[in-house]
Length: 330
Ligand code: AMP
Ligand code: MG
Image 1 (cartoon, protein in one colour):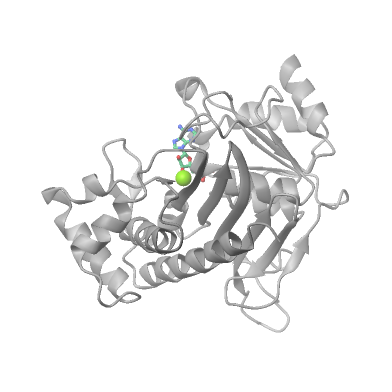
Image 2 (spheres, helix red, strand yellow):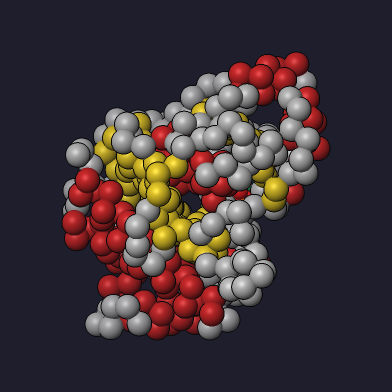
């Protein structure tokens, strides 16, 4: 099968990064530092990027990696405590790594998009990660502007969506931790985060007719999103969820539509490719559909941003045209 090696490499890499993120959260070290662009970062964001870039650089040294975090910022004297924290946590998995190795691995993640490259969000939904909610470790391979492989680990997502809080009768704790995987033309599946057998994902038109959207209100325009959902007959209350996990949630029939409509303040903000690539291929391979608010396919061939697109419409496919029409009329 094409891309079998890359698929397995990506699964192994996000699985290790997820273990690091979970360890940081369990040890209550997931406090956020505010970056100059005012977005949050934790030692786990840097640690996850270090581990994944190390694995990709070893296996595919020719492939650039276009990732979120910047080693130059972490190397600044004001970030010394953070770098020490990152080093300590990475050493739990890579005992011989020193600060300079770690900065070098993270710096691999500031490559330039080329004909073939990886895009990485070491923690998408850092605000959710810090809050104790959903987050995703997202990695995708883009070849000639097309997403070919997408893998995202969602360590806090219940394995069984029908039991989001666990099985109350048996008082069994809810089992959490999922990896969504897709290869272009080969379908999508959900694997358990702890190695085990997977299940393929297929859109079921009878799934819950509800909207899914960001928890963070200013990452979209909730009022407009709710108006469009109502216009096309989605009657259930919207499901708030952080991160790219939203794409996986539609692929496994927890919701029918994800809208991310830019708000007044950020109308000219282009989305980052790493915030969408892995989720888009997972949903499309499960039978869903993704476009921008005008119905244009997302263009992953324009660099690190989705510069040719405005907003995101991701659906189970059945209602996609009606949503675009409702957006046109709105
Ligand atoms: P979500 O968890 O879906 O809210 O998305 C998290 C992502 O939102 C982060 O990776 C940021 O890149 C992105 N983000 C940050 N600020 C904004 C904004 N004003 N509008 C849209 N997305 C944003
Ligand atoms: Mg992100």
